Length: 339
Image 1 (cartoon, helix red, strand yellow):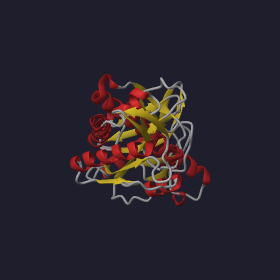
Image 2 (cartoon, rainbow, N blue to C red; image 1 turned 180 degrees about the vertical axis):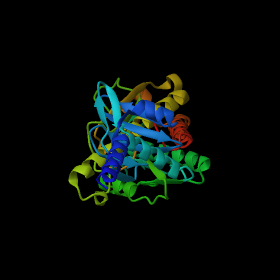
Image 3 (cartoon, one colour; image 1 turned 45 degrees about the vertical axis):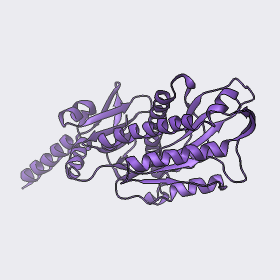
Image 4 (cartoon, helix red, strand yellow; image 1 turned 30 degrees about the vertical axis):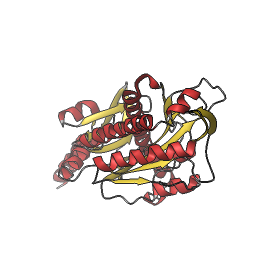
């Protein structure tokens, strides 16, 4: 009886050891047809198959599945510059991917356009002689003009998506009201939203010119995850950071696509000042991928005249539209995964 009991215990010990044995994540993922995206500096990674994702961080036992649920696993770790995990970690990942193979994938369900300023807040302004007349060029008017054109382009291209604006007339909105609108948009299952804020630049340097797109600095951390997800503050922080990193990656990609889109449309009429990072209020308080587009400098005489020209504003708007369309296509073809 004792011999039989000993053999039984030994069997379970061997099984437990095999189940917890360490494997190289890269090799194991490749064998299972799983894509591994690993950042060795941040020690964060994503496992992806057929548009579904598992986000993790070395040393942390919590992982996020498809950016909306989390479970506790054996913590992956780095050993001799190799990412390692238990066999159970990889088997559980494979089981998860099999269980969701036939589920719908992430798509862009809404795009919110936020024309800056409005009403009693004109934003930046400058007076120039245009067409023989002294004209006061106001940021709020240019932002709304571009926003309305962009809305029409997007509505035509995406009748199945919500194309929304924080304002479609000359009204004043507080910054908090703008982000409240963004964060309250109702989405369907597996849907995501994009936030695009439109502005015009100004500078004491009258020679400053060009367009640029801003995104939130990766060093800044928002509370993007519902605090009811976990009662454990440490778990909440880990999961929030993982989701925030995904939003930052998407925002940078949107910025690059928009820069390319504008550049193709306006050519040498203006110049790209590149993608930049900053902690703008509307960007840092929007719980979604978000960018702020500075379309030009109204303190530059040449650019101010362009920003009051309807043909040029159409080019700008269509350039932003093309950038957003490129991102939406990339996002949905990759089933919600951005590199």
